[in-house]
Length: 157
Image (cartoon, rainbow, N blue to C red; front, side):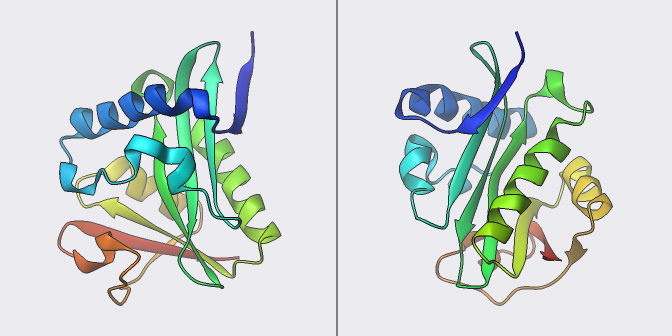
């Protein structure tokens, strides 16, 4: 049985909620930032948005989404890999899919917010060509209002 990577379906709703919440608990992150987890299909429902899931059988391995911030800016959200699947290239594959989608939708820049204590993610995105920047606070990006909690990175496409 191989890895299946596909867009989220309605039937994934409950499992994805538990998976994402489990990542927040594992990492000890502030649960004030769990918005949208109860219905990820709807949260990433815009025509220029996507949410993908990687599964091995029924086991969720990873997930990643792209939200529209503006006509030219996309925001990577809910980019998580289960602990037992980290370090195997899955995050790189998920990012490749997100970048391809972003280019198809004509985004010029993709951004990501990373909790300050998430050193593994900071290193991963830096290795993939993302650079640190300080965004202006945006209404449609709650994390952008909390620069002490998050590091912000962007990649020009």
